[in-house]
Image 1 (cartoon, one colour):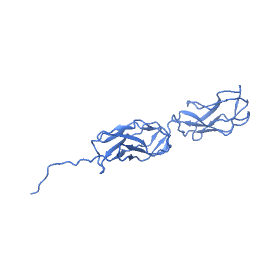
Image 2 (image 1 turned 180 degrees about the vertical axis):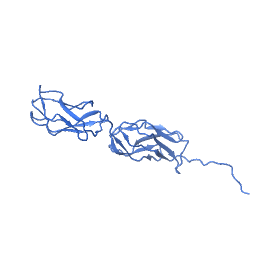
Image 3 (image 1 turned 90 degrees about the vertical axis):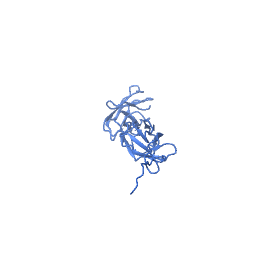
Image 4 (image 1 turned 30 degrees about the vertical axis):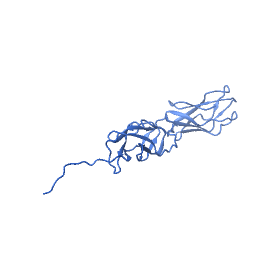
Length: 219
């Protein structure tokens, strides 16, 4: 007659590594990545270590912005039953090919799959090529360029029209000539025939487009 043992348990060994079980997904700049990012403590056999409550910290692994982007939200959380859940992570700069690294002390880091961040809605204008000194009645060169950007400075692929006007009229009484309103192409409005008819120091220009925040050029 056979014999049956009493019950016994096989427990996970000590944690040796971190593993992303829900990695970051593509998101809009400044918007919380959804669903929540989750990272598990695993032993060397890849078993979940359920008694782990240590902190896990997220950081950029691959950062295509070369250090300009900010990883927002609560980047360090304590694990619950071996699982660290990040529910408010966001990235401010649009780009492709970001990855995240999860770390906790001496454990082997976890690395996420790559994800992309796209621009948020247009909210502001910015001069990307400022007006330069020139003679009166002479076209300003190089061409003045104005970008349509989101709140984080990301270029938005927009075709909205942008209008230039004089802010600080150093003439006084100078008149801005040329094509003052142009439609943006891929978010950039290019002004190639702008001139002012009266000499003066420290002119500045404004760029406007509907309800977007106005940009003022340098003098």
